[in-house]
Image (cartoon, rainbow, N blue to C red; front, side, top):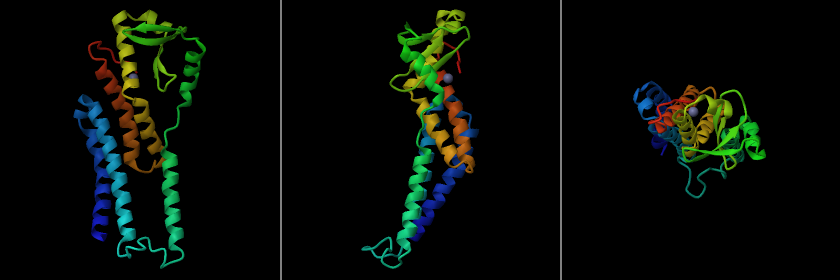
Length: 222
Ligand SMILES: [Zn+2]
C-alpha cells in the first residue's frame, strides 16, 4: 500500500511537471485547441486524484481495517485528519468559479432593454448603442452575444457574422467556465508554475477554439 501510494504521488507530480511543458510548447495545440483544453482538464484531474489517493494510501497503510485512520491509537490523530479535511475543503472553496463582475454592466444593459435584440446569422444578438467597436459573449442564462452599433456600422455583413460566430462559440463551448476554473486554480495555488501556465494557456486556447469555429468567416475577434 505504501509503494502504491508513493507511485501515485510520483505519477501525480510527473503530470503536474510534464503537462505544462507538453501543452505549452507543442504546435499541435494551436491546430487542435479543444483537444488541448481537454488535455489540461485531464492533467488537473490526474494530478489532484493521484495526489489525494496517494496521500490517503500512505495515511491508511499498515492500519487495521476496522480503524484505518488510526483514530483509536492516537487522540491527536483525529484532529490531524480533521485539519487535513478542512484544508481540502478550503482549497475547494478557493478554486470555485466566481462570476465575473466585469460582466454585470453588460448584463444590466441586456436586461434593461438598453441593448435591443437583432438576429444576425441566426443568432439573437443584443445591439448596444455606442460609438466604439465592441463585441463580447456574456455567459449565463441572462447572457448572450452583444455587439455595439459602432462595430456593426463599421463591418460588412459577412465580417459581422464572423464576429458573432466567434462570440457564439465562446458561449456554446462554455469557454468562460474553462477560463474561470483555470484562473481559480491559479489564484488558489499561484506558487505552482503549472497553474500559472494553465491559466495563460487556457485564455489563448479558447480564442483559437472560437476562431476555428468561426472558420469560413475568416475573421479573428478578441
Ligand atoms: Zn474571443
